[in-house]
Each structure stands twice: as structure tokens, then as C-alpha cells.
Image 1: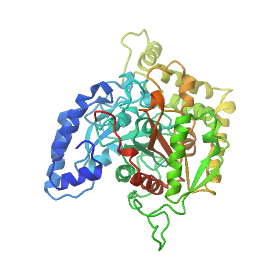
Image 2 (image 1 turned 60 degrees about the horizontal axis):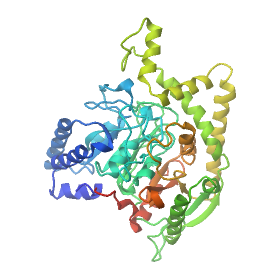
Image 3 (image 1 turned 90 degrees about the horizontal axis):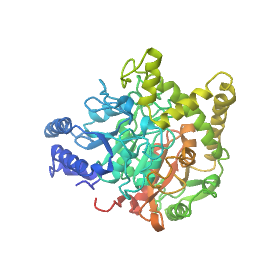
Image 4 (image 1 turned 30 degrees about the vertical axis):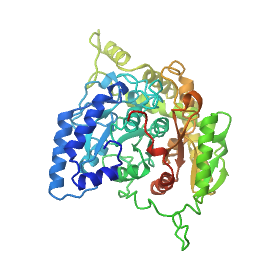
Length: 497
């Protein structure tokens, strides 16, 4: 049952082959059995099963809501009633929110049953899920490897079939990179498409919620319920919720020929900057084979250029830490969250609370952010970074005049070993070279499984990145789904699952 897609689980519920209560029980048992992965921070079986019973009652009344009774796990960056909302930090280790994030609320209204909260890098700051106060998450494909971050808990939970779908957040690649490294499908929609209300902020102009599942079809189903305008979020776009499933299985262009179900007419842009010397040979090989398969589906490959790609790392690591320094200032030990047990006065309490409550990576980014925003450096660093950010966004628009979708690698290599880069933050930052610019531009992006590494890394997955223009999620999902209809990469599971 745990290897079924959302569509298959929906059919099983409708045909009364299983109840929502039994389904929830099944996944809770799997979560307990796979505690070694450390994918979950908090579970509340009683609350989960109560929710499942309520879903069964709605089903018995004839309610046909598409997501009713289906399980979901939430990244711990989304606040929830009944489960802890820690953002992977000691600062919020025992915090339980009095309200639900909009994403959580909307999926609950749709009838989904929450299984628990997934592990993550502290305040979403990291690329390996080793920065969590609750310990690192292990990659289900190779338990000596990282799952990627910061949504590593959600990615690992989906890959290990502990949940059919999970929410995530993406600030610089935090959905796409772990999706790639664990062999699942993950999508980050256009900035402003999914409400950030109740999502614990890291960098407010970059953070965006999304979904992770085995397939593009499952992501499309849940993303439709998550998205839409929210007046409580000032960055939410005033657009109606969209049905992202309506293009699945349809041809790119409607014709009267027998090849109507192909991607004939689709122009795929390949940024030359994404295929340089920094890309490992095993990732290049997997991506190249995937692109050939897209050609067989009728697509045309076009070389494009994103000339400011190499600047995305310095630009991101000026803007994101600056916004993080501002957002983290609320955790001062006065109102809520962790407070140091011993201090002399108010200033000493501030110092000790932040020193003890935040991990090393969060402190590093707060220091960087405070520096670039300080008097005398704002114009030299932060303002210049914002100017280049605009140029990066324009580079994408220039590329989209030549193509419909942009494709390439998600990460320069497959998942690395636990502890391998923990003492070298710069190497960790460089792993996000292909994903950061998408967030800086506010564009939608996704990762789909397309192969594995080679040699000693033969069990570690590779993902293909698909980038679309603003609010082009339905088309992206259509392109991803077309590939998944003729391949089986997304159906592969780790040994023992």
C-alpha cells in the first residue's frame, strides 16, 4: 500500500479496499520502524488517527473531495496546531503554534491526514540536513549519505515511503536539491503562488512553499490545493487557485496527427553555464540520456545562455543572510522560544539566548547579514546584490524568448557522505550553483528523478531540473509527467522499501 501513488490510494479509499484510519495506521507504523532515518521530528499518533476517523466519516457521507483521507507530512517550517513547530532549532524545540500555516490549513480542509513534522536544516539554512538541532537525516538510498537540504526530512520520508507526499520550502533549492538526491519529484512554484503565512521565515523575498512526491502527477494534485491568494500574506499574488492537473497526458500542441500525445513543438533550453567543468561526469551522463529521451518525445534542444549564473552564489549569500538577520531578531528569549537559564541582565540574556539557541550555520548567516546591512557596507554589498539580482531575472527572460522550458542538472554531483562537507561551508554553498538563480528570479522550478551515479555512488540518485517562466507550473508538470509516462525512474525505491 505504501508504494501506491495518490491516485492509486484515492481509488483504494473509494473502493473501500482500505479506510483512511487503516491507511494512517500503516504509515505511522512505517515511520516508527524507520526511526533510524531521522526523517521526522514530531509525530502525534492520536491526533493523526482522530483526523483519519473524521475523514472516514466524510467519506461515508459521500464526500468526493480528491484529497480526502490521503496522508501528508509537513516540513517543520510550517507551523501546526497539535504538533511541534521547531524549524529544526533548539530555539523553538518545544514550541507548539496556536494556529496552522495556510498550507497546512488548506490541505486539512481538503481532507488530508497529517502524519507528522519532518526534519530540516535549522531555520532552512543548509544543503544537507546536517544542521538540524535534532540530528542529521539519512538518505534512504545510502544511509551513509546526506539527503540534501533543507527539506531533507520531507525528501527522505517520501523516498522511504513513509508518506506518499510531503510539503517543503525552497529558498535557494531546498526542495529541488533534496528531491534530486533522494530520487523523488519536487516542485517549487512561482514566488507568491503559495502563501507564506505561518511558514517560519528565513529569507522573506526568496522563501516559497512547495510539494514533494514520487511523481509529477501527485505534485500537481496537491499543489492545486495549496496554492491561491491569501490576504494574510502580503507577498501572495492575487490569483485564483489553479488546477495543475489539466494538462497532464496531453500533447504540447494540439494537432490532427497521430503524434498528438507527444511533446512535438516543445523547445528545451540548455544553459551552457550549467554544463561546464564543475558538473560531475555521472550527473552529465544521466542528464544527457534524459535529454535524448525528450528529443524522442518530439522536443527540440536549444542552447541558451544565463551569463550571470556564477554570480548567483555571491548575490544569494548577501541577500539571504541579510533577510535572515532581520527575521532571526525576533528570537530574543523575551516573548517565546528558548531562553538561557542563567544571565546577569537583559543584554546578557540576549547574548546567551542567541548563543545557546542558534546553531553554527544560523549564527554564521546572522553575522554575515548584519555585516552587509551595516553602515558603510549596505551600498557596497546589499544594494549591489539587488541590482545583480534584477539582471539575473532578465537573463532568464532573454532565454525564454528562445525556448519554452529550461533544463539542466539540479546539483553538480550526487549526494555526498554525511560529515564530508560539514566543516567546509563554501563547498556546501557551491552545491546550490544551479538552483539559486531560480529563487533570485522568483521563477518556478522542479526536479524529477532521471538516473543514478556510477561506481561507489551507483545507489545515489540524479535529478533533472526543469525551470519554467512565471506561473507556468501546469506546463512544467505536463513536461515532467510526459517523461514519467515513458520511464520508470520515479517508480524506483530504495532496497527494503
